[in-house]
Length: 192
Image 1 (cartoon, rainbow, N blue to C red):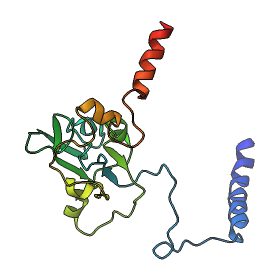
Image 2: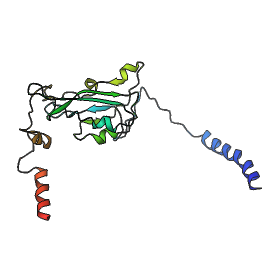
Image 3: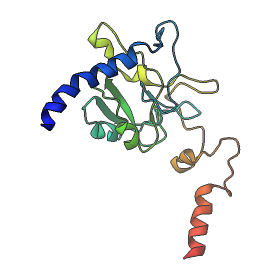
Image 4: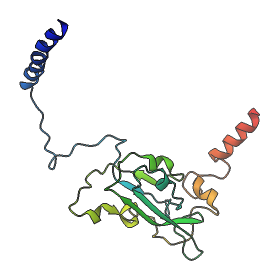
């Protein structure tokens, strides 16, 4: 008996939903002409970041490619030389490609990056009519040069070694005696 009541009630309940929403005012998006801002943590197009002197943060470790579940990232690392330094470490990403036909914008590559070289922007208009244009090369992904930056290759300008470079030596407000890392090590030693 309960199933007969259920069979009679289902169509009426369905029509109830239809009638409730039929007279609501619908908000129409005027998308190409009026673009709404995205959420602050939106996962859009990737960007390879630079240090303040222009050197690339990518060290060619390939962790982002290993973490990608869609196999959309291809990285080929190479060694820096004295005459051709592209990043502050021993290596840099010589070839960097992201295939946006495969990318699922999950952000696992961002989490895997040890130097914060790879981040995601709020740019979401990636559609194209040519499949080859959706494979972004390193030149398409690199952050633009800002005032005060020098196009690599060049020597490190922010410190005497890689540790100073990554800690921010040479930047305004940095002092060798007051680095956060040194304070943390001293406080941990005091508590031991």
